[in-house]
Amino acid sequence: MPITVANTMNSPRDVRPTVAADLTIPSDAAEARRIQDEIEQHLHARHVSEHDIFSIKLALEEALVNAIKHGNQMDRAKKVHISYQLFADRFDVQIADDGGGFDPNDVPDPTAFENLERPCGRGLMLMRHYMTEVVFNQRGNRVSMSKVFHSGGNGKK
Amino acid sequence: MSSQPRRRRLEVEQIGDVTVVNFIDRKILDEQNIQVIGDQLFSLVDQDGLRKLLLNFGNVEYLSSAALGKLITLNKKLQGVGGRLVLCNIDPQIYEVFEITRLDKFFNIQKEEQAALQAF
Image 1 (cartoon, chains in turn orange, brown):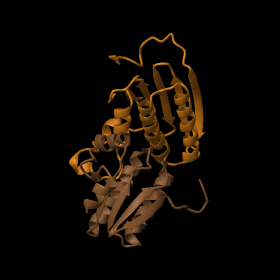
Image 2 (tube, rainbow over the protein chains, first blue to last red; image 1 turned 90 degrees about the vertical axis):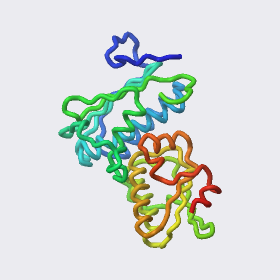
Image 3 (cartoon, rainbow over the protein chains, first blue to last red; image 1 turned 180 degrees about the horizontal axis):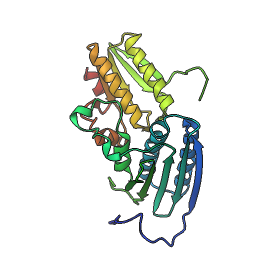
Image 4 (tube, rainbow over the protein chains, first blue to last red; image 1 turned 30 degrees about the horizontal axis):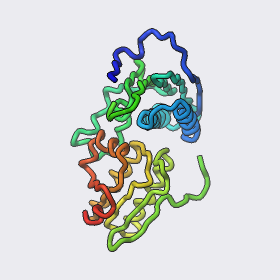
Protein backbone atom coordinates (compact mmCIF):
# COMPACT_ATOMS: atom_id res chain seq x y z
CA MET A 1 0.00 0.00 0.00
CA PRO A 2 1.66 3.24 -1.10
CA ILE A 3 1.80 5.97 1.47
CA THR A 4 2.16 9.62 0.52
CA VAL A 5 3.98 11.67 3.03
CA ALA A 6 3.83 15.17 1.54
CA ASN A 7 3.15 17.94 4.02
CA THR A 8 2.36 15.53 6.80
CA MET A 9 2.87 18.14 9.43
CA ASN A 10 0.88 20.88 7.75
CA SER A 11 -2.24 18.96 6.73
CA PRO A 12 -5.43 20.06 8.37
CA ARG A 13 -6.30 17.56 11.02
CA ASP A 14 -9.73 16.82 12.26
CA VAL A 15 -8.63 13.68 14.02
CA ARG A 16 -7.90 13.80 17.71
CA PRO A 17 -4.86 11.96 19.02
CA THR A 18 -5.43 8.67 20.83
CA VAL A 19 -2.83 9.70 23.36
CA ALA A 20 -1.23 13.10 23.94
CA ALA A 21 1.02 14.56 26.60
CA ASP A 22 2.99 17.70 27.41
CA LEU A 23 5.78 17.15 29.88
CA THR A 24 8.75 18.97 31.32
CA ILE A 25 11.68 17.16 32.88
CA PRO A 26 15.05 18.21 34.29
CA SER A 27 18.11 17.38 32.18
CA ASP A 28 18.45 13.91 33.62
CA ALA A 29 18.89 10.59 31.83
CA ALA A 30 16.65 8.68 34.25
CA GLU A 31 13.82 11.17 33.74
CA ALA A 32 14.22 10.92 29.98
CA ARG A 33 14.19 7.13 30.25
CA ARG A 34 10.88 7.29 32.14
CA ILE A 35 9.24 9.27 29.32
CA GLN A 36 10.70 6.97 26.68
CA ASP A 37 9.31 3.92 28.49
CA GLU A 38 5.92 5.61 28.76
CA ILE A 39 5.86 6.33 25.04
CA GLU A 40 6.94 2.80 24.22
CA GLN A 41 4.11 1.40 26.31
CA HIS A 42 1.57 3.52 24.42
CA LEU A 43 3.00 2.37 21.08
CA HIS A 44 2.81 -1.28 22.12
CA ALA A 45 -0.72 -0.85 23.44
CA ARG A 46 -1.80 0.56 20.07
CA HIS A 47 -0.14 -2.30 18.18
CA VAL A 48 2.33 -0.13 16.33
CA SER A 49 4.66 -2.39 14.34
CA GLU A 50 7.90 -3.54 15.89
CA HIS A 51 10.01 -1.79 13.31
CA ASP A 52 8.15 1.50 13.75
CA ILE A 53 8.58 1.23 17.52
CA PHE A 54 12.30 0.53 17.08
CA SER A 55 12.59 3.57 14.80
CA ILE A 56 10.75 5.90 17.16
CA LYS A 57 12.73 4.68 20.18
CA LEU A 58 16.02 5.24 18.41
CA ALA A 59 15.10 8.73 17.21
CA LEU A 60 13.75 9.66 20.66
CA GLU A 61 16.93 8.47 22.34
CA GLU A 62 19.11 10.50 20.00
CA ALA A 63 16.94 13.62 20.29
CA LEU A 64 16.74 13.45 24.09
CA VAL A 65 20.48 12.86 24.46
CA ASN A 66 21.06 15.85 22.17
CA ALA A 67 18.72 18.03 24.24
CA ILE A 68 20.32 17.06 27.56
CA LYS A 69 23.94 16.82 26.52
CA HIS A 70 24.29 19.47 23.83
CA GLY A 71 21.29 21.73 24.29
CA ASN A 72 21.29 21.93 28.07
CA GLN A 73 24.98 21.13 28.54
CA MET A 74 24.12 18.46 31.14
CA ASP A 75 22.84 21.19 33.48
CA ARG A 76 20.19 19.46 35.56
CA ALA A 77 18.55 22.79 36.33
CA LYS A 78 17.78 23.27 32.65
CA LYS A 79 14.61 21.65 31.39
CA VAL A 80 13.63 19.49 28.49
CA HIS A 81 10.07 19.94 27.22
CA ILE A 82 8.51 16.94 25.52
CA SER A 83 5.13 16.87 23.82
CA TYR A 84 3.82 13.89 21.94
CA GLN A 85 0.68 12.88 20.10
CA LEU A 86 -0.19 9.38 19.00
CA PHE A 87 -2.67 8.95 16.17
CA ALA A 88 -3.91 5.81 14.46
CA ASP A 89 -1.58 6.40 11.54
CA ARG A 90 1.36 8.31 13.02
CA PHE A 91 3.32 9.49 16.02
CA ASP A 92 4.41 13.12 16.49
CA VAL A 93 6.85 14.37 19.10
CA GLN A 94 8.33 17.78 19.85
CA ILE A 95 11.39 18.13 22.05
CA ALA A 96 12.69 21.49 23.20
CA ASP A 97 15.65 22.33 25.42
CA ASP A 98 16.52 25.54 27.25
CA GLY A 99 19.77 26.00 25.39
CA GLY A 100 20.91 28.60 22.91
CA GLY A 101 20.22 26.37 19.94
CA PHE A 102 22.42 25.39 17.02
CA ASP A 103 22.40 25.23 13.23
CA PRO A 104 21.65 21.66 12.10
CA ASN A 105 23.43 22.49 8.84
CA ASP A 106 26.65 22.91 10.79
CA VAL A 107 26.80 19.24 11.73
CA PRO A 108 29.38 17.52 9.52
CA ASP A 109 28.44 14.40 7.59
CA PRO A 110 29.37 11.49 9.86
CA THR A 111 29.69 9.13 6.89
CA ALA A 112 32.36 11.22 5.19
CA PHE A 113 35.66 9.36 5.19
CA GLU A 114 37.38 11.88 7.45
CA ASN A 115 34.56 11.73 10.01
CA LEU A 116 33.91 8.01 10.11
CA GLU A 117 36.25 7.44 13.03
CA ARG A 118 34.81 10.21 15.16
CA PRO A 119 33.04 8.80 18.21
CA CYS A 120 30.11 11.23 17.91
CA GLY A 121 27.98 13.19 15.45
CA ARG A 122 25.58 10.51 14.25
CA GLY A 123 22.46 11.34 16.24
CA LEU A 124 20.92 13.75 13.76
CA MET A 125 21.55 11.43 10.84
CA LEU A 126 19.83 8.56 12.63
CA MET A 127 16.86 10.74 13.56
CA ARG A 128 16.46 11.76 9.92
CA HIS A 129 16.73 8.21 8.66
CA TYR A 130 14.33 6.62 11.11
CA MET A 131 11.62 9.29 11.27
CA THR A 132 9.40 10.38 8.39
CA GLU A 133 10.03 14.04 9.10
CA VAL A 134 12.48 15.98 11.29
CA VAL A 135 12.16 19.76 11.51
CA PHE A 136 14.01 22.24 13.70
CA ASN A 137 12.80 25.65 14.76
CA GLN A 138 14.77 28.71 13.71
CA ARG A 139 16.85 28.84 16.87
CA GLY A 140 17.63 25.15 16.77
CA ASN A 141 16.56 24.29 20.32
CA ARG A 142 13.32 22.58 19.34
CA VAL A 143 12.90 19.58 17.09
CA SER A 144 9.61 18.23 15.76
CA MET A 145 9.63 14.67 14.55
CA SER A 146 6.95 12.61 12.96
CA LYS A 147 6.64 8.92 12.15
CA VAL A 148 3.99 7.79 9.71
CA PHE A 149 3.24 4.15 10.42
CA HIS A 150 3.72 1.36 7.93
CA SER A 151 1.48 -1.64 8.26
CA GLY A 152 2.73 -5.11 7.32
CA GLY A 153 6.19 -3.62 6.78
CA ASN A 154 8.03 -5.08 3.86
CA GLY A 155 11.27 -3.31 4.53
CA LYS A 156 12.50 0.24 4.75
CA LYS A 157 10.41 3.31 5.34
CA MET B 1 22.41 9.62 39.05
CA SER B 2 22.97 6.15 40.44
CA SER B 3 25.48 5.68 43.21
CA GLN B 4 25.36 1.92 43.26
CA PRO B 5 28.57 0.00 42.66
CA ARG B 6 29.22 -0.70 38.99
CA ARG B 7 27.94 -4.12 38.17
CA ARG B 8 29.40 -6.22 35.41
CA ARG B 9 27.83 -5.42 32.06
CA LEU B 10 29.82 -8.02 30.14
CA GLU B 11 30.10 -11.80 30.12
CA VAL B 12 33.59 -12.73 29.08
CA GLU B 13 34.90 -16.13 28.04
CA GLN B 14 38.09 -17.27 26.42
CA ILE B 15 37.97 -19.48 23.33
CA GLY B 16 41.53 -20.25 22.37
CA ASP B 17 43.25 -16.90 22.14
CA VAL B 18 40.03 -15.06 21.32
CA THR B 19 38.07 -13.31 24.07
CA VAL B 20 34.34 -13.62 23.41
CA VAL B 21 32.23 -10.89 25.01
CA ASN B 22 28.47 -11.03 25.44
CA PHE B 23 26.46 -8.04 26.66
CA ILE B 24 24.31 -8.48 29.72
CA ASP B 25 22.16 -5.46 28.87
CA ARG B 26 19.62 -5.99 26.10
CA LYS B 27 19.49 -2.26 25.51
CA ILE B 28 22.75 -0.36 25.25
CA LEU B 29 21.42 3.09 26.02
CA ASP B 30 21.97 6.01 28.33
CA GLU B 31 25.21 7.91 28.36
CA GLN B 32 26.03 6.67 31.84
CA ASN B 33 25.41 3.02 31.05
CA ILE B 34 27.38 3.26 27.83
CA GLN B 35 30.23 4.90 29.71
CA VAL B 36 30.39 1.93 32.12
CA ILE B 37 30.16 -0.63 29.31
CA GLY B 38 32.85 1.25 27.42
CA ASP B 39 35.12 1.32 30.47
CA GLN B 40 34.67 -2.42 31.02
CA LEU B 41 35.49 -3.10 27.35
CA PHE B 42 38.55 -0.84 27.44
CA SER B 43 39.86 -2.49 30.60
CA LEU B 44 39.89 -5.84 28.80
CA VAL B 45 42.53 -4.31 26.56
CA ASP B 46 44.30 -1.96 28.96
CA GLN B 47 44.24 -3.99 32.15
CA ASP B 48 43.82 -7.57 31.05
CA GLY B 49 46.03 -7.17 27.99
CA LEU B 50 43.60 -8.95 25.70
CA ARG B 51 44.17 -8.43 22.00
CA LYS B 52 41.55 -10.45 20.15
CA LEU B 53 38.05 -9.37 21.06
CA LEU B 54 34.89 -10.83 19.62
CA LEU B 55 31.77 -8.92 20.61
CA ASN B 56 28.65 -11.05 20.35
CA PHE B 57 25.54 -8.88 19.97
CA GLY B 58 23.11 -11.79 20.29
CA ASN B 59 21.53 -10.36 23.41
CA VAL B 60 21.34 -6.77 22.18
CA GLU B 61 17.95 -5.50 21.04
CA TYR B 62 18.77 -1.90 20.89
CA LEU B 63 21.65 0.56 20.89
CA SER B 64 22.22 4.25 20.36
CA SER B 65 24.82 6.24 18.48
CA ALA B 66 26.77 6.80 21.69
CA ALA B 67 27.33 3.04 21.83
CA LEU B 68 28.67 3.16 18.26
CA GLY B 69 31.10 5.79 19.47
CA LYS B 70 32.46 3.47 22.15
CA LEU B 71 32.90 0.68 19.61
CA ILE B 72 34.90 3.02 17.39
CA THR B 73 37.12 3.99 20.30
CA LEU B 74 37.58 0.34 21.23
CA ASN B 75 38.52 -0.49 17.65
CA LYS B 76 41.14 2.27 17.60
CA LYS B 77 42.50 1.15 20.93
CA LEU B 78 42.91 -2.43 19.76
CA GLN B 79 44.48 -1.39 16.46
CA GLY B 80 46.92 0.72 18.42
CA VAL B 81 48.27 -2.35 20.18
CA GLY B 82 48.19 -4.62 17.14
CA GLY B 83 44.96 -6.26 18.24
CA ARG B 84 41.71 -6.99 16.43
CA LEU B 85 38.01 -6.47 16.97
CA VAL B 86 35.26 -8.52 15.36
CA LEU B 87 31.51 -8.15 15.88
CA CYS B 88 28.98 -10.93 15.38
CA ASN B 89 25.34 -11.97 15.81
CA ILE B 90 23.96 -8.53 15.09
CA ASP B 91 20.21 -8.58 14.55
CA PRO B 92 18.95 -7.07 11.26
CA GLN B 93 17.43 -3.98 12.88
CA ILE B 94 20.65 -3.18 14.71
CA TYR B 95 22.67 -3.99 11.60
CA GLU B 96 20.72 -1.34 9.74
CA VAL B 97 22.02 1.25 12.23
CA PHE B 98 25.57 0.24 11.28
CA GLU B 99 24.68 0.42 7.58
CA ILE B 100 23.08 3.86 7.76
CA THR B 101 26.15 5.25 9.50
CA ARG B 102 28.48 3.40 7.07
CA LEU B 103 30.04 1.57 9.97
CA ASP B 104 29.13 -1.79 8.48
CA LYS B 105 32.21 -1.53 6.30
CA PHE B 106 34.31 0.03 9.00
CA PHE B 107 33.99 -2.84 11.46
CA ASN B 108 34.62 -6.51 10.80
CA ILE B 109 31.11 -7.89 11.18
CA GLN B 110 30.39 -11.60 10.91
CA LYS B 111 27.03 -13.33 10.99
CA GLU B 112 27.70 -15.91 13.65
CA GLU B 113 30.19 -16.67 16.36
CA GLN B 114 31.69 -19.72 14.61
CA ALA B 115 32.52 -17.75 11.47
CA ALA B 116 33.67 -14.83 13.58
CA LEU B 117 36.19 -16.96 15.49
CA GLN B 118 37.77 -17.81 12.14
CA ALA B 119 38.04 -14.13 11.27
CA PHE B 120 40.99 -13.55 13.56
